[in-house]
Image (cartoon, rainbow, N blue to C red; front, side):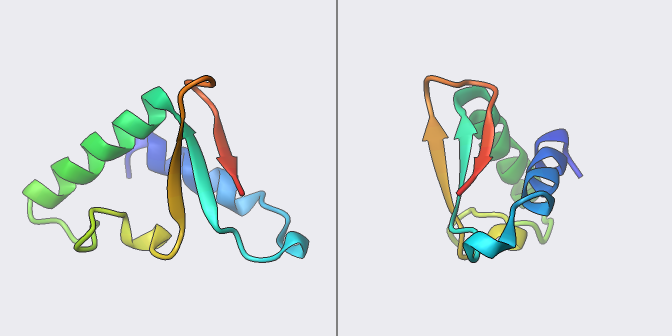
Length: 77
């Protein structure tokens, strides 16, 4: 698993479920870019990581939002 996917997994693992189901992952610009590159790489290699929209299967149903101001942040909403 790529470093960015591990970071997202950690962020989801610490999300307080008393606030309901997570609906979005907000990524800093660099992390968003890396996620796109990782997904494209896995998909081109014939991996099973992506859906038809390019979203990692583990995060299907979650929106992935870009945060241009906080380029290194990951936030689960």
